[in-house]
Image (cartoon, rainbow, N blue to C red):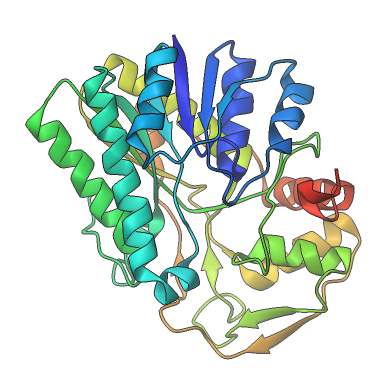
Length: 338
């Protein structure tokens, strides 16, 4: 029996696939490669010695997805596939609603057809909106400030409703915070197309010389140094969180909701300084006005994941900075150079 990983060629998906293969699991990836590279499969094989089954399809295409379920013996799904850029979602809301929601509905429909009722869903801390105080706990009300966030809020509700309608389903909704870092081998890592949307890949591209300087949005927040504080989590820790969630849904039919974060806040300037110290590289930056909708502080309470999944982060901010630079320095143009 295999684990189906949608979006498995992407950043978080590929790291999760590596850990699944290392555990001896059979893995099937479906990915339309709209924001990922086919070369990831070669890298996964180099790391693990195994090449996962791969189908280049869009999961909104029910006929093609049905063919995968027909050919492969799927026991559970880890669902990463979806658009994920906040700014892009504001510009193209219909595209985001159509892609993220319709593709997930398609997936649920085909899973139901083949009686596969275990799913780990890639949600986000963005579902907490901007009015809940940190540390954020799973029982807080959800909301959003942009179309991307609303797709996560809606999809969480859809999956809850699926369980209400059919209690044979077992569902994990994983709300993760700020994934950064890369596999320690430097073989796989974050490979943004165009201008990075997130802080760490932008730092890495400044470090490698692809960007002139970093913009720091605001230095007048009520924080340790005036810059925004976020909860950063190493992508490999995050991958193990998915494996723990997969184990949980295999033993318990229910909707399980977990924060995956370190429980510790790190400011923008603290992250930059750690990157500079660990990698002995100066990161030029400038202070620019705050972005609309940004909160001063956002970090997780991850006690529930510790108590119920026996999961917690093991890697430090220093580890994240070193592994990011190891990836970026070995792959200055991401996967495109190979």
